[in-house]
Length: 171
Length: 326
Image 1 (tube, chains in turn brown, cyan):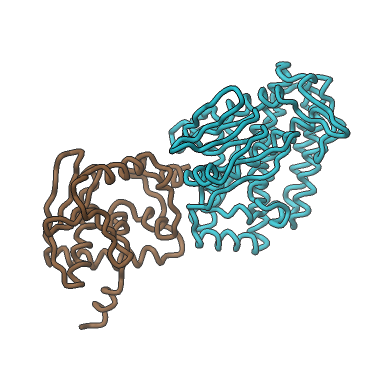
Image 2: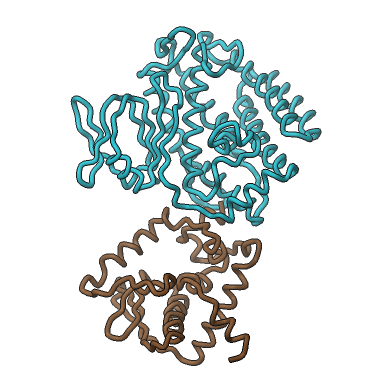
């Protein structure tokens, strides 16, 4: 195996970092330094409550693998991620693709599902070679961003106003 | 916004099942624990570890004041937002002399700005305002050490306090500012208000990744949470002093609200209630923030000051202290 790919496989991050890479690179950097404000955000609280009360019949919930990635639900051979809304669909897809990729490295092949219970919608995902490549690129981009000494500057986006970091970035 | 609870009566904080109660001899009141950020305790209050453990689950800070209303200390639950990275960089700004002076200067600059702001609309204080301006403008460009900065700040503050006699009721004449213990009513008011701000700032720091013991204007050895003293400089004139002016000039607080004991002078229970009420109103008053385009309370501005410091430490944005524009 070429050295480069070997190194890439050593890059392991929490799934949420993949998500943040697509939502906001500054948020990713701050989160990686433990500068977090999620515990003060009503939106985050709503998300937590949704996780707790959705799919009460599922038994394998919140499965932590290698002390690193937290899978919301494992059922019927699928890795399921529960999300509050589909506004950040691309980020959600990449997060699940990363889980599938991670499990594949361990010799486990699964399907992915994103549940949007409030919208009564779900998205079924399959890890394709294209996505596998995209995940690898995402991992090295995370490595690059989080090893910078200073955070990427704030850039105003639509999502800012509902972000837990809004007052931090713009106040 | 999370609320602040002030307990001025005697009683007991008790956890029963998953509810927190404050019980006095005559009544039992449940406390909405999810929405409380801090509790200031002035009365004689009993509580046990069962209650403390429950309170700390919610990250609620308890501030205790003794019989005379002097700040005694705080119960601070295990900190949840910790970032080694931020603390290391915060310490670097303390160790580097220039970086330290920069921040110390910022705190004083904002404090002086708010002192002048308080005097600006008072005709009686015009001469004092000019004197402060002279002192500050002459001194502020020649500062090469923290002690020089402290000296300048002290001189400005003396002029500022001496101007109070011009527009406060005669009963509240101030010879000079004295602390520990205050011996006259005006000093007692200032001390009481300042200690409330100190503990409120401490609560805001607690919710961020800042380390409250690494400070810049004050020496970190001075007090356990000296960063709280630093940030309080900004808010003492902005919040406490304006509350005092209002209460005294409207005759809401008069000499009958003070008790004297040996050499002490302190607010009695009735006086404290009036003061706390006005201070609470002030802290909850909101002002439109120009960048956020949201209404932010005075308490919220304390939190934003903490955020700006973090951004300064991580090399994101140079710190610029609050200067009330409203």
